Image (cartoon, rainbow, N blue to C red; front, side):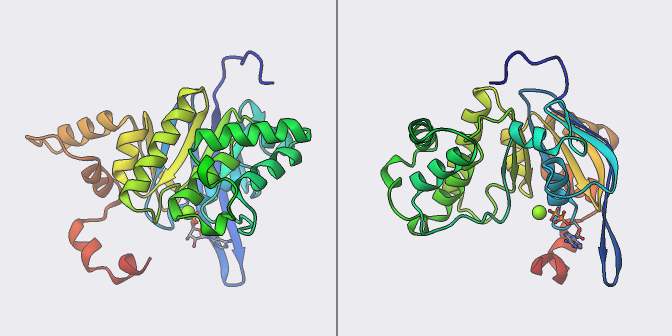
Length: 272
Ligand SMILES: Nc1ncnc2c1ncn2[C@@H]1O[C@H](COP(=O)(O)OP(=O)(O)O)[C@@H](O)[C@H]1O
Ligand SMILES: [Mg+2]
């Protein structure tokens, strides 16, 4: 039970840093970011490949140690009380490790049992979530027979088993076809409408524009822009004295210093 929430941020990070130690030296993946996400928001974390999005999500969700700085999620300090945080969050990671021999229903029921539900409660929670993500018809087939979009919806459902206050989604639609992407957007809206705060990373500008009330753009481990999509567009329009409204694409390219020409011509970008 979540009870009445004290007025506090859903996510608050101060000076968050992650340096990976590798045999070739140190990689400064996240170089000091501040974040504040209010309860009920859908907050977008946008950035090119390698910008530090997944590293940030992994720190906020207790999966990776914080090199320096601090973070609170759902009011709980991530470093001081990781298990307290884990009880209040749901996470769907970029590379999900679902056991594909199990059906969607089996996976969700197992997840419920791991969170301490009894057999009957776990079964009814699984059914409720299958309905939410519209997988009831395929619920009893092994998940390896699911399409990419169906697998992502199952990931989403799995992250909701413990009724999280804050849901973290790391690139929930990367690699999906446009129709499946729209279905995921609908699911995210539904989940948010039920009161869950959503922190979502994406490489897709349109996704952020459609879903997120506010967003931050991260590049090379630092936040380079933050605001509502319309604030970010208005800022660029004013700064460049444009006679038309720029798109979020324009904002992104301006913020990350990547020109359209360089993107097209840069072999590394294409391979990434
Ligand atoms: N386990 C790791 N060890 C060393 N470097 C890593 C590790 N994971 C990520 N990195 C590096 O950290 C940077 C940020 O990576 P990541 O957070 O995965 O970015 P994004 O999710 O935005 O694509 C990249 O330069 C990446 O190569
Ligand atoms: Mg990533």
